[in-house]
Length: 85
Image (cartoon, rainbow, N blue to C red):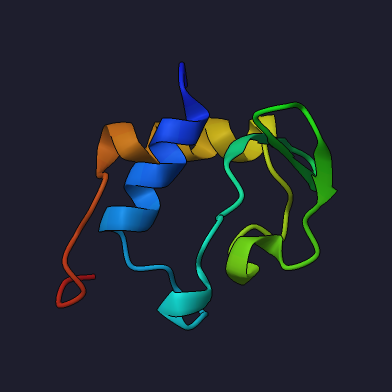
């Protein structure tokens, strides 16, 4: 991202921030990347991801085996509606 500050300003102006009252969503943390149990902001500062990004990343970030499995599945069938099995 060439200008994280502008991007964050746009996101706060046009996006609904989850899990918080909107009036308190003044300065969201700009996440530029993640690896294992950490994520990083645009300055490279490292944060321990205690919440597993809302509990959906319990196996960590950037796990090559998981990424490869997702890519293989996406080649076969990326999505099917809930009414099908």
